[in-house]
Each structure stands twice: as C-alpha cells, then as structure tokens.
Length: 534
Image (tube, rainbow, N blue to C red; front, top):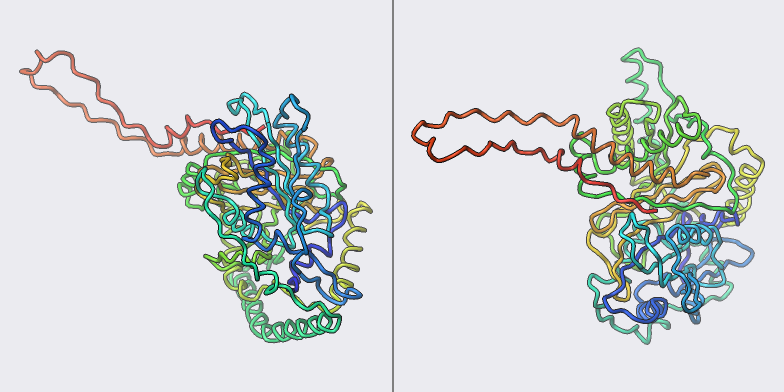
C-alpha cells in the first residue's frame, strides 16, 4: 500500500470526460526480417513476461473511505492482459493496411477517452499493418500506441519505464522471473483504521514540511522581488509585473472530447548544432522552431496577436541520474516562456526566447528545492476534486476560457529520450511521437521527444481549436528548413584560396587541376531535407 502524492492525485481529481489525464506515445515499428504471424500476439507474450519490472503494470487504485485523503496504490489481484493490450487495426484476414493518417485519427480518438479506474491505469494498442506514405519511403510497418495515466508517471518516468520494458537489440534480453514472495511483501493491510490513520499521519508530515520551508521560501521570494525593485529604481524604469498575461488565440478555449493528433520529425544533431551556433541550447532551438511554426500557422489561418505567445513548460524536479523504476510519479513544476512570435526577424525571435529561458533557469535554480510536489492529504479530494474541478469545468463550458486572459497560450514539453534504437518483441522502434494533455483554456499541446538521432514532435489539440492540424505539423518541418537557410546565410564566408604561380619547368606536366574551395558545414546542412511524418 502506498499513498499517491498530492501532485499525482491532482491528475485524478481534475479528470473529466473532456479532460482525460493520461499521456502516451505512438511508435512506428520495423518488424524483424522474415517475421510471420501477429505482432499483437508477440507484444502480449513479451509484456506478460516483464510486467513485474515496473509497478505501474500491476498496481491499481483504492480510494479512501468518504474521500478523506489521497487514493492508495495497491497490487491488483490479477491483470487481464487481453483488456490492457488490444489490437487497434482491422482483424479481418486480408484487410487493407491502415494509412498513417488513419492511424493518427484513431490515436486521437483513443487518446480522448478516459482510462477505466477499475483496472491498472494503462492501455496498449497494437497495429499489425500500417501503410507508410511515399514521402516516408512507403512500405508496411507495425505500430504501438500507449496511454498511461499521468497520476502514475511523468515524462522522465515514462522514459525510465520504456528503458525497463524495451531492449537494445532485436534479440530480447533474458529477464528474471518475478519473486514468488513479491506479492506478500508488497500487499498491505487495508483495514479502515489503518487507512484513516495513514491520512492523518501523512497530512501532519506534509504540514510540518510546509512550515519548515516557509522561512526559506519567504526569503527567496523576498530577495527576488527586491532585486526587481532595485533594478527598476536604479534604471528609472517602471517596475514590470512579474507575470505577463498571454494574448487571446484560438488555442485558448474550452475543450470537448474531440481530438486531433499529428506528428513531425527533424534531425537531432543538426538541431543541436544550430542552437549552439546562435549561442543557445537545443531547447532554445526547439522553442524557436515551435515559435516560428506557430507564427506562420496563425498568420495563415488567423490574425497573429501583436503580443508574444506564451508557452507553459513543465520543468522536471527529478534528480539527475534517478532510475528507480518503483518511483515513476510526477516530480515536475511549471514555467512560462515567451516565444517572441510578435517579432518578424528570426534572430530577434531567437534572442527573445533565449532571454526568457535564461530567466526561467535563474528562477528555477533558486526555487527548485522549495517547489512542492506534494501537499496534505486530508480532505484533498473534496477541496481539489470538488471545488477546483467545478470551477475548471465552469470556466471551460461557460465560454469564459475564450474570453478571459490566460497566463499561457499552449503547453510545450521537451523530453530527452534514448539516444539509441529500442526494440519491442524484436521489432525496432522507428519513431517516438508523444501525446500529452490538453486543458480548458490550453487546447494545444506540443510535446517533443528526442530518440535515436531525431526529434519527434507530437501535436495533440482540441478538434475545434486546431482545425488545420496538418498545417501546423508542416509548419514545424518548414521552420527547421528555414533555420537551415538562416544558418547558411549568416555563416562566415570561406577565405578565398591563394593564387599560386607554377614553375615554368612543370608546364609539361599537363593542365593543372583547379583548386577546390572547402565547403562550410552549414552549406552541407542546407542540403539536408527534413523528414516528414504525415
């Protein structure tokens, strides 16, 4: 028995049919040479042998009596693997393979459906045959679509889970069987008195932590405000609000159950190099690509706001190197980044993004140890799950989401993934496109994951908020090409080769070969074409 943290439980409290609180990914898979049979059956057999490697697969929720506190994780009596791992494409023999566009549409529909809380909070969907478009080489591949509740893991926790379940080679590694005493060790006494007692003891512990951190928090916030005030008085500039409101966009609206999902892919090494070339980071470059794509999309389909769009970006609080598969819960906070979409000049837009991310880094360094990922459990389901959910639903369904100003226009996440190819049941993952959460007022989410030498974008949105979803995916790919051209145009010119005079005695050797001018790396880069995912 283990109680959920406050942050994990909040994803349960705020969940509604319009706002499912799970995350997922779509992986296109290259089947092993000569593979025959069903990839769906192969995945079921593979996962069945490894479910003990990660608690998320076998733990389920138990809710406190009268909702007095956070729910508990307990071991399920059994796990129905046929319920959790389903075939998504047609099962009829001789059926035509699904197109990639059809797969994206089905994944959007599945991602818009809540997970049944009577079972462990995960579902996998297997595509045995997908027809790739000609732009991606054609051919037939398989597909793997996953959805896991955000209460069970965050983005980095998902990467850790993937590393536990997948392999580094086509040949699946040997996995030790589960400990026969594991269930007896993990199962806890769920008597009423013990459950209620855990609520009070947990709440008292959380209140003690809050009280202990208040002096440090007050000092840190006071110091930050003082610096802002001193800086403003010294320069004679009127102090600015610590938080700017985002301009209205089509993405700031209430959401329904309909979803759209599209993807894009660009090279990783080149993206990193371009970020470094302008004095920024890979994350800065990714934000510039998103900013440029959003600017072009809004210009094409809507009026572009005169103010900069603001992105809400999750920031991981997980310690570097943490790999404990038993602790995959959420350890994140949220930051706001201005995207500079109001600036037409690409370099000015990059400078605005870098200035904004630098402020985020500075503030996170001073506040990281003070940001809570938990809060007292006592009556939290009533206070958060009742009042907060009611307010959020009223906000979304009444139309206020499109009329009241927001602090952000969309969510953008950047998740570092494995640098080498991964394999599932012998099949090679070709892509790792993520799907995340949208909310009332934040109807667009762009999540980026690096994987095996490329950068995979997963764009999920409310169907009405992003009616031309494919245009935004193409705008991301076009923004990468624009960045290539910008790098080539701003690269220093190569020095002209010196003219040399050949001695007269060597004229009989024939016509001299022309001297070759070495090419710049950025010139080579401009010939690279961005990969597109339809």
